Image 1 (cartoon, one colour):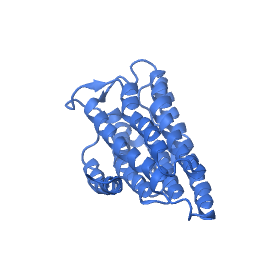
Image 2 (spheres, helix red, strand yellow; image 1 turned 90 degrees about the vertical axis):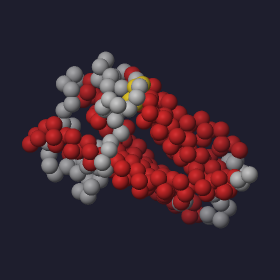
Image 3 (tube, one colour; image 1 turned 135 degrees about the vertical axis):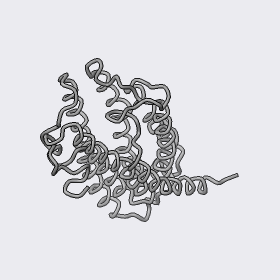
Amino acid sequence: MVSDESLFHYALLTLYLMAPPTFISLRFLQAPYGKHHRPGWGPNLPPPLAWFLMESPTLWLTLFLFPHGQRSSNPKSILLITPFLLHYFNRTCLYPLRLLRAPPGKTASGFPLSVALMAFAFNLLNSYIQARWVSHYKDYDHDGWFFWWRFFCGVLVFLCGMGINVWSDRELLRLKGEGKGYVVPKGGLFELVTCPNYFGEIVEWLGWAWMTWSWAGLGFFIYTFANLGPRARANRQWYLEKFGEDYPKKRKAVIPYLY
């Protein structure tokens, strides 16, 4: 039988190996939901249900695995896993509720079940890696004061990113709720990038990588950019094609002034 340590390292290696093909493939083929929704990907789910189902493994698997870790009773371990759970409580519970409150027809394009299942599988893999690292494999005894320096710096970055992510998502839903269809978003970080919601999420997991100071956290950060970076570029191109000269050319896709 494969030992738990071997399973963890195989899972971590898989996370790193997934990032390059994900980045490359998404430069040419976008996941068919939201602005890029198109037929041919099988049955659709209502978006609120799809988001709930595909994000939920992170909550229930983390809450199942965490108490079984050798270091789960360490206060540092509990403190470290809290921001991770906070993000996924928002994604699993609060974000779908905000979608449900959106005006009828504004999220009616549907979310392909096939895409939701792929996201479900990724979240199983990633939640296992992150929860197992924090509760079982991270050595808190030799961190000393470095733990607190890394944690407070990382959590500040994480919370800034989460604030950007949540605000941007709410602003996009508000614009759709005005009944005008798609419009050019304005204000805040929308003046710098097409997808500040994606930028916020990338910043979150940069903070998480800093907090955990681990290959597990770094792998998640890298994969997040590999997944969201190309989609942000596709979104920018979509806006340029739809709005032409009315869309500011100076806006980058997701990283202000860079990308």
